[in-house]
Length: 103
Image (cartoon, rainbow, N blue to C red; front, top):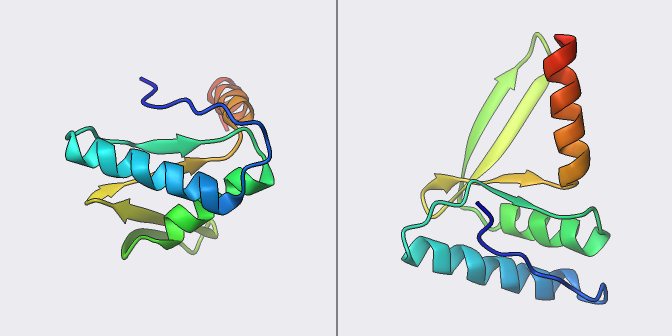
């Protein structure tokens, strides 16, 4: 379920987008709504705003698999994990392809 869809003109700074995302996450927490992921269409300012959200976390869940060289660092925001998806359409396509190819 989409909680917030924020159309932009494309001239917003990363700081402006960060403030919007931070407000949405705070309102969701106050309303007892669990946000699992945040996404964007791939614009640099949106990526930077998401990076600021991730860096604002005080704790992280980390997973390291040295054999496969996989290292995940998942921020914990308001006591819940938050995943960043930068390009939603591309992510969906990759996930579907991997599911059906057995990767």
